[in-house]
Amino acid sequence: MKVRYSYLPQQFGEIDDLWEELKAFVPTGDFTLGKPLTEFEKRFAKLIGSKHAIGVNSGTDALKLALKAIGIQPGDEVVTAANTFIATVGAIHEIGARPIFIDADDSFCMNVDLLEAAITEKTKALMPVHFSGYMTDMNKLMPIAEKHGLPVVEDACQSILGAIDGKNAGTWGIAGGFSLHPLKNLNVWSDGGLIVTDDDEIDRHLRLLRNHGLVSRDEVGIMGYNSRLDTIQAVVGNWLIPQTQDIADKRIANAAYYDKHLSEIAQIRIPPRIANMRIVYHMYMVFAEDRDALLRYCLDRDIEAKVHYPIPLYQQEGLKQFGYKAGDFPVTDRHSSELISFPADQHLSREEQDFVIQTLRDFYAGR
Ligand SMILES: *Cc1c(COP(=O)(O)O)cnc(C)c1O
Image (cartoon, rainbow, N blue to C red; front, side, top):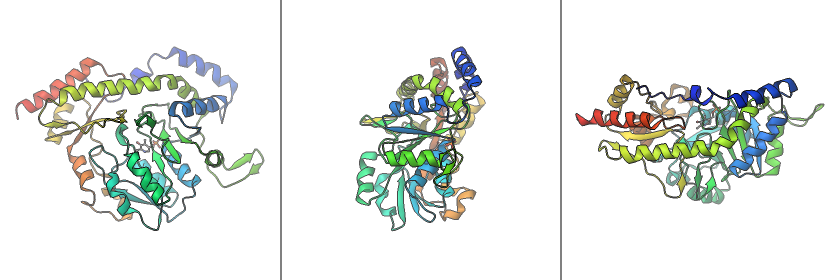
């Protein structure tokens, strides 16, 4: 049995209703900042529980423009997680700011106990990353941010509808960034992203930033960017919005099924499942003994397991300029050698999950 990682052919295989909507939309020619975009922004804001949502052309730009909108300047320090996807660091770097890394804990997010020691005079913002569908411990982080007067921009790209105490990822800080990339939980057919905020002034600023700073057709108010979310992707987004809760629920159910069975294997360790946290499992990851051999064993049996990530981000060649060296973040290092990811998406069948579980049992049976 093949257990694929990408479910996009299944997700977008039979979508006659969406094709009808696209067919109706295209002849309107309303391609930039059109009506479906405004509708999508409203529905997304409602889904997340924020006052505003602003569509932009990627998750990376969502983070970059949010930092820009709160006044981050070249040379400022932005404290973030050492084990994130490169896009977080790219967004910070693009506006000339400097990423300061914090090690993870076994929830794959920033260990907030290490945060205060990393704050300096130059620190101007915090960018916690809600990695893999978990959330950073925001109940602990927000009081530290307030104590130091630091704005918080959440990287919620992997945790749409993740929540702590019922409060969604992206709504804790001054702004939150989301990605609509095809591999994310709410996925359009191209790059895309959104920023959510409750702040009217930041909302206004972001709408200028994403559209060349244009106040009107003829007036430029500020220097901005071309970073609009394509209206045609907003049509796809509007089609997906009603499914988003269900997508999260199915992933949660699939993860619970894996947890139940994989926890019976002595060589597998399930990460801590946190009682007041809704984990949405953008990635389903466990700690595995003999990880590299297990990965090969799975791939040989057509299970597309993955490692997120084999090379810790802070050790990558392209990040040398930030001055970190191997060993600076021991938990992140350990994760890169112990973690393995399995598909847990909404299109995965029970049979496929059973095959993964049995394959892991078989692998460890001889050991
Ligand atoms: C996907 C992602 C982003 C944004 O990526 P885009 O591809 O630009 O949409 C940012 N941070 C994290 C942690 C991500 O996984």
